[in-house]
Length: 434
Image (cartoon, rainbow, N blue to C red; front, top):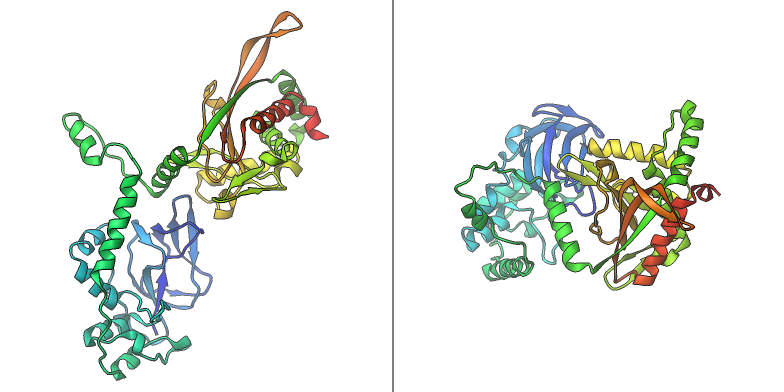
């Protein structure tokens, strides 16, 4: 009996993905656990393994197809002795389907009833082979009324051919229209700037290149727009003197050189933030809709720039790790982030984030909070500045930081305590090893 291979949900928030590459072809015999394809989500490209054994009867979704919904059939696996004729024809490209489907409400309902996975009353899914579904549609059968004789009650060809035609329930078009209207109203309620048509008309007389948005860029745009519109940001700024840290870092790196370890300023920033979250535990929290979650451990996310976007891999239990351990873990996460090889659990979670643009020569900036985090620290470059100490003007290395804070979770005084704790840790780096 033919088995549909479905687009997997590779993360809790994944709704659709891009079938980046097939690693098998039609006619190949595959075993359970064998890598079938590479699936690109909004954050990473991940390998997809076979669950069952059999022969690839037909590939339904071509390489490079984007917008493939989770649980949509992407290929058909045949058992011994089955013919590829039992497999459905390849689906049209995902980009072409919405326009045709939206043309008329009634045909949409009819197609949904005949070709989509059938459902019993109450919403339970009816499992049936693709050939059984096609025969049922031709005979006008409601698959919910057919008893399956295949494994786990799956409906096969013989079950459908033996069943008498029963009128399928009519799907009303009105609810579909209502849902569409609600979605349209919801989408239009959030301002997104000028429409595509307006912008294209404005620049119609100027040469330009259109850059297609991939899943990552779409997700970044949606999340950051939501963050700025829904999260009440406020900002706290401090200058941090780095001379003691730079001298201590140079000493440590000289001692660690034989082990191939080289600590960066960012490693010290991560450690300082992790310890500050322990020193100001009320700020180690996230917004959870109708409540605040406070954490015992310091899970610090760090922004990593990659081509076309960014990742925020999370260093878990950062307060307990040595500087060398944090440095090694950060280098590994950053490399795999740039290769888009991070697993979802490695970039999801955390309560606090660090975004460092100092290496690009940026003196200071304001970062946007990544919900549900309560804060993010924007780190600028260390530059030589005049410092007044005991009435004398000296030259020192100063780094500007800006803490962006979610006012729903952290009030002004609490935020000030947090940024001051970060400052104290960085200006007294030896204490971070105690």
